[in-house]
Image 1: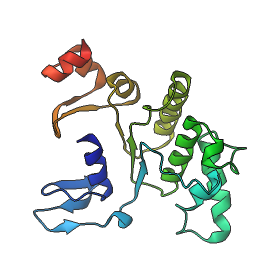
Image 2: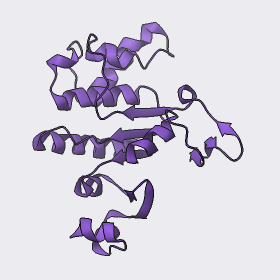
Image 3: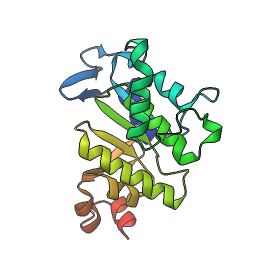
Length: 199
């Protein structure tokens, strides 16, 4: 259910009923018949599999998300975004020449290239080793500090979520069973799920 929530926000999945609104803009309201197309939603999505084009360099992967700006500006903007995620010097490498953590940062730079109104991260820590996980966590903290866009991170590891989040929603069988600040959720769990996670 957690990935489905991200896909619904991005417009890649049409819920049978519900409402999605970001920064006061309604993207979906099934009752009112509103459905903004995925390509018209300013969403940055980092997929669990990264979804990079294997035949393209890191720079070219990011440039694919910059098609709405003049061609003469795309390379400079892509390089700036790669530098923002600490990949300067690796712009010409293809995905197979990058580590898993580096590929994930290319995917993050590509997501940021869309000037998103919301950034969606699907299990960003799941396929990386512990040092890479720590580096990615620091990067997300940096990103949150210099950006005012909401970031929604899906994780099966409540500790990762608690370290990175201002607020946590626990999802069970597609429903939010508890929501709140990480400290409150861990120190005073209200649901069976949060008591199990806190224990």
